[in-house]
Length: 456
Ligand SMILES: *Cc1c(COP(=O)(O)O)cnc(C)c1O
Image (tube, rainbow, N blue to C red):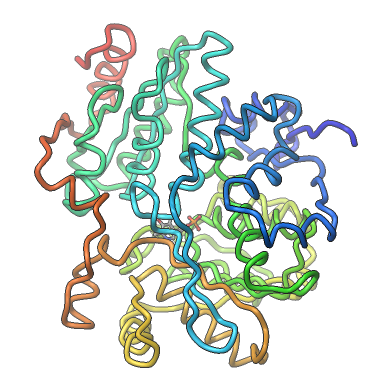
């Protein structure tokens, strides 16, 4: 099998290996990296996954991509180290299960990818003798997962910007209590302001001498580890060769791309259900074939999915033979017939999200937070069009209910139990800087941090 090369969805940047794709994040032509082919795992090996623990499945899947750049023994160690927590599959009715991806240290599914990517990037940076600064803007979950994953890694510092009034106290503490190599900036502005400053810093020639890298889901290093839990769920819920249905609550479409990748690697998927909140650009596109981004993005209860133009659609469209650029212009239509055969999407507005939290609890004693509720409702929408009776199904719950206590309290009248990883943050001292939205001030701050080790 030929070595895998990573090419840009915009097609105007040279192909690179995995190491380079991870360290760069985005391709120089502003496209996103995709493998030029997908390694296939044969049915006999897939059948054997049923008896393997999560870290070993992670190793079997990821080693298909890392062969050129990472020794197998090293990778196996990284998998065991990164995936030292439970991945519960909760039975609900018939063969329908909820896969809880919330048992990692920051209680969202982003731990799965962030922990593996941080370990790989940390290793590559050390081997190359590079001193790296990870710069990221967050509306909550990405910042804490990324900061937690890079915390304490030598040769790497992280700067996270968050909008001071838009993250919960719990989400803030997950970032500000880490300290050491994690520098947190509270911005007096909105998420869009944080994102704009980060983008400007990446493009700023005055900062060209700093090694800045990004850690959001434009990085292919975030997507590959997200294919693993689909293999895991199928190995537990479906028989050998039996197709499974997944429902994945989607925002920037990185999580669902993990399932698309798993499918291309040979995992039999009957249908991939990708419900969204009020940011409904994707179901409209799937229905009409016409793409229109939503700007500004709409604020919904499932706040980690408030994305009006999902970056990863560029990858999805490319895999179906089309070309969508970074600003949302469709240069070439994908094969819509194939897309509609493989995917199902629906919109779940906030009222329905609340009703779903209530109904799932009353009917099944199933506790969902707003993101998982969108996933659950999406499955029910799909089941109204095609029977799921006797079909293995996994609905992804992407965060711990205790991260969204207000939504649970107002709909169910009780507070979710707080996991130890979140509870232990309550008494810890916080450390963060506060800045306005003036780019020049932010730039000086960042430059001083990288050059002297302390912010200006
Ligand atoms: C980020 C996030 C999502 C959306 O995942 P995408 O990969 O952006 O589609 C869903 N739920 C939670 C809790 C998240 O943090």
